[in-house]
Amino acid sequence: MRDVSEVWKSSRLGSVGAKLYDSVIEKESLAVPLSRVIFGTDLRKVYAAMDVVCDVPNGTSILDVPCGGGVTMRRLRRDQHLRYVAADISPVMLDRARKVAAESGVSAEFVEADVVNMPFSDREFDLIVCFNGLHCLPDPGAAIAEMARCLRPGGRLISSFVARGAVRRADAYAATLRAAGVFGPSGTNADARTWLSSAGLVVEKFESSGAFVVFEARSSY
Ligand SMILES: C[S@@+](CC[C@H](N)C(=O)[O-])C[C@H]1O[C@@H](n2cnc3c(N)ncnc32)[C@H](O)[C@@H]1O
Image (cartoon, rainbow, N blue to C red):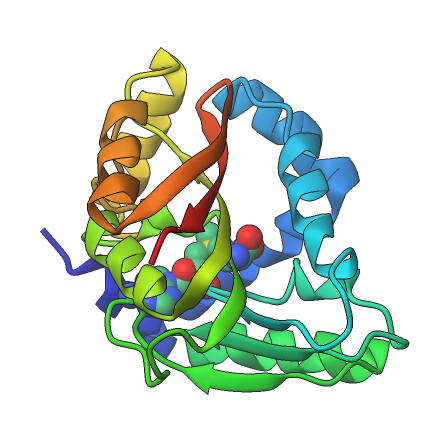
Protein backbone atom coordinates (compact mmCIF):
# COMPACT_ATOMS: atom_id res chain seq x y z
CA MET A 1 0.00 0.00 0.00
CA ARG A 2 1.21 3.53 -0.86
CA ASP A 3 2.33 5.82 1.95
CA VAL A 4 -0.56 8.28 2.22
CA SER A 5 1.62 11.14 3.52
CA GLU A 6 4.02 10.70 0.59
CA VAL A 7 1.11 10.85 -1.84
CA TRP A 8 -0.13 14.17 -0.40
CA LYS A 9 3.42 15.52 -0.27
CA SER A 10 4.27 14.57 -3.84
CA SER A 11 3.71 17.43 -6.24
CA ARG A 12 3.15 14.94 -9.06
CA LEU A 13 0.62 12.62 -7.41
CA GLY A 14 -0.75 14.94 -4.76
CA SER A 15 -1.36 18.13 -6.62
CA VAL A 16 -4.22 16.94 -8.83
CA GLY A 17 -6.15 15.43 -5.92
CA ALA A 18 -5.27 18.35 -3.65
CA LYS A 19 -6.52 20.96 -6.10
CA LEU A 20 -9.66 18.98 -6.88
CA TYR A 21 -10.48 18.48 -3.20
CA ASP A 22 -9.78 22.09 -2.30
CA SER A 23 -11.86 23.51 -5.11
CA VAL A 24 -14.84 21.59 -3.68
CA ILE A 25 -14.37 22.25 0.05
CA GLU A 26 -13.96 26.00 -0.51
CA LYS A 27 -17.43 26.12 -2.11
CA GLU A 28 -19.91 25.35 0.66
CA SER A 29 -22.83 25.34 -1.80
CA LEU A 30 -21.18 22.39 -3.59
CA ALA A 31 -19.53 20.58 -0.66
CA VAL A 32 -22.66 20.49 1.55
CA PRO A 33 -24.93 18.54 -0.86
CA LEU A 34 -22.04 16.33 -2.02
CA SER A 35 -21.14 15.27 1.52
CA ARG A 36 -24.77 14.62 2.31
CA VAL A 37 -24.91 12.14 -0.57
CA ILE A 38 -21.51 10.52 -0.04
CA PHE A 39 -21.05 10.63 3.73
CA GLY A 40 -24.61 11.16 5.01
CA THR A 41 -23.20 14.24 6.70
CA ASP A 42 -24.43 17.75 7.37
CA LEU A 43 -21.15 19.48 6.51
CA ARG A 44 -22.53 22.80 7.77
CA LYS A 45 -21.59 21.50 11.24
CA VAL A 46 -17.95 21.29 10.15
CA TYR A 47 -17.99 24.79 8.65
CA ALA A 48 -19.61 26.06 11.86
CA ALA A 49 -16.80 24.46 13.91
CA MET A 50 -14.23 26.22 11.68
CA ASP A 51 -15.76 29.55 12.71
CA VAL A 52 -13.97 29.17 16.07
CA VAL A 53 -10.96 30.97 14.57
CA CYS A 54 -12.91 34.22 14.27
CA ASP A 55 -14.33 33.87 17.76
CA VAL A 56 -11.18 33.89 19.90
CA PRO A 57 -9.65 36.81 21.81
CA ASN A 58 -6.84 38.85 20.30
CA GLY A 59 -3.47 37.41 21.26
CA THR A 60 -4.58 33.81 20.74
CA SER A 61 -2.03 31.55 19.05
CA ILE A 62 -3.66 29.16 16.58
CA LEU A 63 -2.16 26.21 14.73
CA ASP A 64 -4.16 25.07 11.69
CA VAL A 65 -2.90 21.61 10.70
CA PRO A 66 -3.29 20.27 8.12
CA CYS A 67 -4.37 23.64 6.74
CA GLY A 68 -4.95 22.36 3.22
CA GLY A 69 -5.80 25.17 0.83
CA GLY A 70 -6.86 27.49 3.65
CA VAL A 71 -10.58 26.79 4.02
CA THR A 72 -10.48 27.52 7.78
CA MET A 73 -8.23 30.56 7.28
CA ARG A 74 -10.91 32.06 5.02
CA ARG A 75 -12.90 32.72 8.19
CA LEU A 76 -10.30 35.08 9.71
CA ARG A 77 -11.05 38.82 9.81
CA ARG A 78 -8.48 41.51 9.06
CA ASP A 79 -9.12 43.22 12.41
CA GLN A 80 -8.07 40.17 14.44
CA HIS A 81 -4.67 40.20 16.10
CA LEU A 82 -3.66 36.59 16.35
CA ARG A 83 -0.67 34.41 15.73
CA TYR A 84 -1.98 32.08 13.01
CA VAL A 85 0.28 29.25 11.87
CA ALA A 86 -0.84 27.18 8.89
CA ALA A 87 1.01 23.87 8.49
CA ASP A 88 0.70 21.15 5.88
CA ILE A 89 2.88 18.51 4.25
CA SER A 90 1.84 19.58 0.73
CA PRO A 91 3.62 22.53 -0.90
CA VAL A 92 0.71 22.77 -3.36
CA MET A 93 -1.80 23.17 -0.54
CA LEU A 94 0.42 25.67 1.27
CA ASP A 95 0.62 27.78 -1.90
CA ARG A 96 -3.15 27.80 -2.14
CA ALA A 97 -3.40 28.81 1.53
CA ARG A 98 -0.85 31.61 1.00
CA LYS A 99 -3.03 32.99 -1.79
CA VAL A 100 -6.09 32.91 0.47
CA ALA A 101 -4.22 34.90 3.14
CA ALA A 102 -2.92 37.42 0.58
CA GLU A 103 -6.34 37.89 -1.02
CA SER A 104 -8.11 38.34 2.29
CA GLY A 105 -5.38 40.51 3.80
CA VAL A 106 -4.79 38.38 6.89
CA SER A 107 -1.38 37.54 8.24
CA ALA A 108 -0.25 33.99 8.84
CA GLU A 109 2.90 31.92 9.05
CA PHE A 110 3.20 28.96 6.66
CA VAL A 111 5.10 25.85 7.63
CA GLU A 112 5.73 22.74 5.56
CA ALA A 113 5.65 19.92 8.10
CA ASP A 114 4.51 16.40 8.78
CA VAL A 115 1.86 16.54 11.49
CA VAL A 116 3.53 13.73 13.43
CA ASN A 117 6.79 15.64 13.71
CA MET A 118 6.19 19.36 13.87
CA PRO A 119 8.88 22.03 14.39
CA PHE A 120 7.04 23.65 17.31
CA SER A 121 7.83 23.83 21.00
CA ASP A 122 5.90 22.01 23.68
CA ARG A 123 2.80 24.00 24.72
CA GLU A 124 3.24 26.61 21.98
CA PHE A 125 -0.43 27.04 20.96
CA ASP A 126 -3.70 28.02 22.65
CA LEU A 127 -5.84 26.42 19.98
CA ILE A 128 -5.18 23.76 17.34
CA VAL A 129 -7.66 23.20 14.54
CA CYS A 130 -7.43 20.00 12.51
CA PHE A 131 -10.27 19.81 10.04
CA ASN A 132 -10.81 16.93 7.63
CA GLY A 133 -7.26 15.68 8.03
CA LEU A 134 -7.12 12.75 10.45
CA HIS A 135 -8.55 10.32 7.88
CA CYS A 136 -5.76 11.33 5.46
CA LEU A 137 -2.97 10.25 7.83
CA PRO A 138 -1.25 6.90 8.33
CA ASP A 139 -1.51 7.10 12.13
CA PRO A 140 -4.15 9.52 13.47
CA GLY A 141 -3.35 8.62 17.08
CA ALA A 142 0.29 9.66 16.64
CA ALA A 143 -0.87 12.93 15.04
CA ILE A 144 -3.15 13.70 17.97
CA ALA A 145 -0.33 12.97 20.44
CA GLU A 146 1.92 15.42 18.55
CA MET A 147 -0.80 18.08 18.52
CA ALA A 148 -1.36 17.55 22.25
CA ARG A 149 2.37 18.15 22.81
CA CYS A 150 2.04 21.55 21.11
CA LEU A 151 -1.02 22.63 23.14
CA ARG A 152 -0.70 24.77 26.26
CA PRO A 153 -2.34 23.39 29.40
CA GLY A 154 -6.06 24.06 29.03
CA GLY A 155 -5.64 24.65 25.28
CA ARG A 156 -8.17 23.21 22.86
CA LEU A 157 -8.04 20.88 19.89
CA ILE A 158 -11.02 21.19 17.53
CA SER A 159 -11.28 18.71 14.71
CA SER A 160 -13.45 16.88 12.23
CA PHE A 161 -12.79 13.64 10.42
CA VAL A 162 -14.43 10.79 8.51
CA ALA A 163 -14.92 7.89 10.91
CA ARG A 164 -15.06 4.23 9.93
CA GLY A 165 -18.07 2.05 10.58
CA ALA A 166 -20.78 4.72 10.76
CA VAL A 167 -22.24 4.85 7.23
CA ARG A 168 -21.85 1.89 4.90
CA ARG A 169 -21.66 3.85 1.62
CA ALA A 170 -19.11 6.21 3.19
CA ASP A 171 -16.98 3.21 4.21
CA ALA A 172 -17.08 2.00 0.61
CA TYR A 173 -16.08 5.44 -0.71
CA ALA A 174 -13.29 5.71 1.90
CA ALA A 175 -11.99 2.29 0.82
CA THR A 176 -11.71 3.60 -2.76
CA LEU A 177 -9.84 6.68 -1.58
CA ARG A 178 -7.59 4.48 0.55
CA ALA A 179 -6.78 2.36 -2.47
CA ALA A 180 -6.00 5.57 -4.39
CA GLY A 181 -3.57 6.51 -1.62
CA VAL A 182 -5.30 9.66 -0.31
CA PHE A 183 -7.07 8.22 2.74
CA GLY A 184 -5.37 6.48 5.65
CA PRO A 185 -6.93 3.88 7.95
CA SER A 186 -8.90 6.45 10.01
CA GLY A 187 -10.76 4.77 12.89
CA THR A 188 -14.11 4.29 14.56
CA ASN A 189 -15.65 6.74 17.02
CA ALA A 190 -14.31 4.55 19.84
CA ASP A 191 -10.80 4.64 18.31
CA ALA A 192 -10.95 8.44 18.24
CA ARG A 193 -11.84 8.61 21.92
CA THR A 194 -8.86 6.35 22.65
CA TRP A 195 -6.49 8.56 20.58
CA LEU A 196 -7.66 11.57 22.61
CA SER A 197 -7.44 10.05 26.07
CA SER A 198 -4.05 8.47 25.31
CA ALA A 199 -2.78 11.94 24.39
CA GLY A 200 -3.98 13.44 27.68
CA LEU A 201 -6.89 15.30 26.08
CA VAL A 202 -10.29 15.53 27.73
CA VAL A 203 -13.26 15.32 25.36
CA GLU A 204 -15.67 18.26 25.71
CA LYS A 205 -17.76 17.66 22.61
CA PHE A 206 -18.05 14.63 20.34
CA GLU A 207 -20.76 14.84 17.72
CA SER A 208 -21.43 12.54 14.77
CA SER A 209 -23.21 13.57 11.61
CA GLY A 210 -23.30 10.65 9.21
CA ALA A 211 -19.73 9.46 8.76
CA PHE A 212 -18.22 12.72 10.04
CA VAL A 213 -17.29 13.39 13.65
CA VAL A 214 -16.71 16.89 15.00
CA PHE A 215 -14.94 16.91 18.35
CA GLU A 216 -13.46 19.35 20.77
CA ALA A 217 -10.95 18.32 23.44
CA ARG A 218 -8.92 20.15 26.03
CA SER A 219 -5.38 19.56 27.20
CA SER A 220 -5.29 18.37 30.76
CA TYR A 221 -1.55 18.95 31.21
C1 LIG B 1 -8.55 16.58 3.02
S1 LIG B 1 -7.32 17.80 3.25
C2 LIG B 1 -7.95 18.77 4.61
C3 LIG B 1 -7.32 20.12 4.70
C4 LIG B 1 -8.10 21.23 5.35
N1 LIG B 1 -7.94 21.23 6.80
C5 LIG B 1 -9.54 21.24 4.94
O1 LIG B 1 -10.43 21.14 5.79
O2 LIG B 1 -9.79 21.37 3.75
C6 LIG B 1 -6.03 16.85 3.98
C7 LIG B 1 -4.74 17.60 4.09
O3 LIG B 1 -3.84 16.83 4.87
C8 LIG B 1 -2.55 17.08 4.39
N2 LIG B 1 -1.66 16.02 4.88
C9 LIG B 1 -1.66 14.71 4.52
N3 LIG B 1 -0.73 14.05 5.23
C10 LIG B 1 -0.14 14.95 6.05
C11 LIG B 1 0.89 14.86 7.02
N4 LIG B 1 1.47 13.69 7.31
N5 LIG B 1 1.26 15.99 7.68
C12 LIG B 1 0.66 17.17 7.39
N6 LIG B 1 -0.32 17.32 6.48
C13 LIG B 1 -0.73 16.22 5.82
C14 LIG B 1 -2.72 17.13 2.90
O4 LIG B 1 -1.65 17.73 2.23
C15 LIG B 1 -4.04 17.89 2.79
O5 LIG B 1 -3.80 19.26 2.66
